[in-house]
Amino acid sequence: MITHAGVEDQLRRLAPQVLGALVRRYGHFDLSEDAVQEALLAAAMQWPEQGVPENPRGWLITVASRRLTDELRSEQARRRREDAAAAEVPADKAVAPAPGEEQLLDQDDTLTLLFLCCHPALSPASQIALTLRAVGGLTTAQIASAFLVPEPTMAQRISRAKQRIKTTGIPFHLPPEPERAERLRAVLHVLYLIFNEGYTASSGPDLLRSELTTEAIRLNREVRRLLPDDGEVAGLLALMLLTDARRPARTRPDGALIPLAEQDRELWYADSIQEGLALVTGALAQAPIGPYQLQAAIAAVHAEAARAEDTDWAQILALYELLERISPNPMVTLNHAVAVAMVRGPEAALDLLETLETDDRIAGHHRLDAVRAHLLEMAGDYDAARSSYRAAARRTTSLPEQRYLEARAARLAVGR
Image (tube, rainbow, N blue to C red; front, side, top):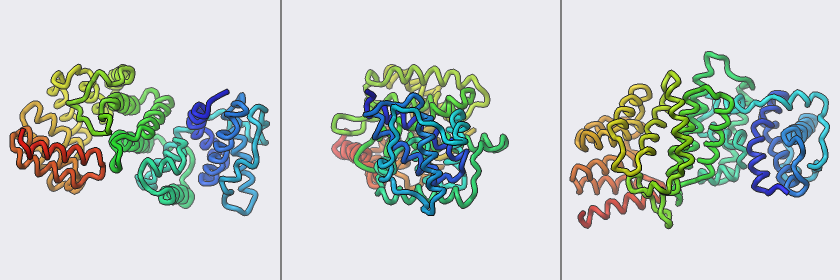
């Protein structure tokens, strides 16, 4: 008998394919998404006990299609999700497709669905929420928990996104070729944001939210399956794997943050590093070189160093200089400054940091204060470093980061 965890994994993988099939056939993204959620709930209740049907994707499409057509025939906008359990379909019996449903069973619309969820008509917050719900298969409660907002707030955000799709009449098809590269960048950016929020949570008591990093990696694998020759898709997957490989060494048993230079690299996931290195090697051989490939190359240099002191900072600096040229942004400059400090000294890095003081995108952000504090500490200006560490601690909403920054300031206060 398949476990509940096994069913959940399978349903999460099938969810975007089922939703894509319904939206392609019927339109009505909002009603289709509700029908798919009801079908997934029915499967989650029945399959562990009755067994997985021979064609699970077809089973889900058929059940969801019938519930959707019921809704379209009725005057109700949507049926309460609790009613899903009232119309069970035995999982051990074949479900005959309704007329017209056969054409839904073959095509995989996952990529089209991702493009839809990341449409520029939606806000970045809506893109992330809708992607996790519609493509990732996460429940509203799970997404709300990951982003530390009340479930009704997240439900409203998702509902507004679906209503926006409806009112703007966004078509369900891949964008035309001239728009496809730009839209793919939006898809990859959303996956990048989801991963980053999971890897270093922006707020709350925990540094990591592994359900988000895991989901971002899974979705990135799906995009790579559909676009195996795209260098940036491979580069982002490599970046995620090489970064996530450090996860077991990033916190102490009490949840305290451990900086990269102090991590026990024996704890890093060797399999993830091996896969990430192979991906970035292949991605860099594909032109043109993009920002995710370069970030993955930087992560690879860190991964290849057996000890922090073995890190090839000159190579990292060269990569950041190239990254600054092709994709300049404040976070790149912050990391570039650290590399400058390791190669040319902290004074040169502090000069570079001054260019960010008037940049509204980063001025006042705790990371700017934290990097400045680190550079000042390297330069031996401990009073100024302590002040910057404390400013960073006040500005962050992540408790592990706050405790780490306060500890650095306290250490300087009592002397080195």
